Image (cartoon, rainbow over all chains, first blue to last red; front, side, top):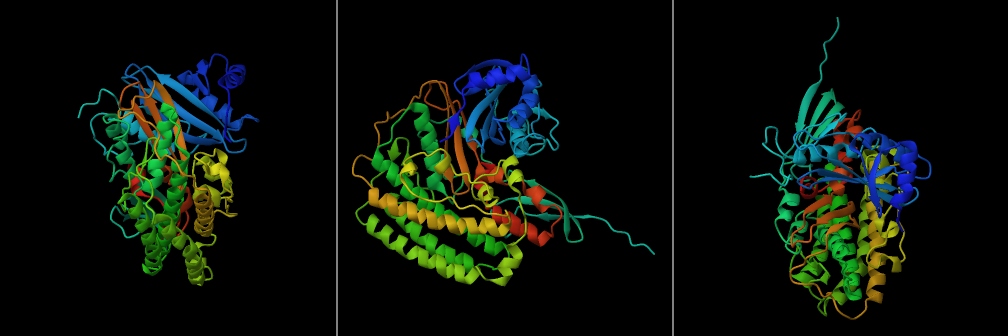
Length: 147
Length: 367
């Protein structure tokens, strides 16, 4: 049975390695500051005992005042999971570091978020629209999108 | 005298006999060898995630049928599991068993198509595929008996299943289950020792264990690379913890392993169906669910092991009748992630074998 790791345990470890990186936590969810995403990702993947080697899915939600990104992380070795989140307040030019170099499974998923939410992932090797065509106006999954 | 060489571009798709739907690949070739490949998606993009935000939870069920249209039953189930988790609905036991039976039949059907299309892609044009269709037809007849549909079932609903099975279903299912292993054996005789199949599949498109995990692949692709990971065992949903079955894994991660895994899994599914039939209890098939569902504020991620891998729905509720956000974790899209790495350096003819072995459905890739 997949064990849902307690957020408090992860927060302690994250804070020890990356002071000031976490914002809040609860249940199995840890919210971190957006500038720490790449470092936290590498930490969670490479730390013995955590070994989050599998990015289960990556998606975003538009909460009208901010975007929330969800990283659903699983360790196939230990069969445990945690949800990592981060928030972006800049609606005009949302930008976040790509985790492609940590989990290559992020490739298409980051392109999808770029396509449908307009969030730019810096460091992604091939960031362009995945489903919609070049020149499409707007980002459909944003709540203020008008057809 | 020196000869000038240059690379050239070959376009495959969106209309191509072996692209399993409208999918396009742009190959950069050096002679016959692939130097680079870029997959191009989006020809079937309908914006299901956005459309879902405008309809109620139960209305969204019909979209799930149209994701992976070769496995509509399991799509229904994944969505139902996610909404039930979000709203805290307990499904009656009989409904859980019916779900298991239908999901395993669906898995067999999807794997039949997966294997059939793979043989099609490597040159055994249509003959083996039609054998597959012959058996799949029997499964579709069973589904027709249960819910009157052959492709888009909408059978599993939030809280249970739409209707109980008719009296003639169990005898028909028994008959099918008894004959299927014999058919698989017959099919194996045709292919297992077929020299052409072995040459085209063995040691072609090897995906290492590490790469399979790192690229977030799931299902038969992940297991063929030697990772024992199946949601039915890793986080048993429904009543899967009550059945005895094995998770077949591959050793090499080549096209042949991905093909073998599907055959083995069909045999395991038969075992599960036999056990489920024996244990099938009487009782309700539907929980008490309000006509207009308003799940409490919050979020949930429900997942199942679909035929092509982990299929999950991430739902965010703001307490209204419509989901605030619905995200689908599509196994077909994520299984395509290693395509570029697998294709670079191989001959273009093998690219089709690799692509066929990944077994995708464009309805789920583009959504």
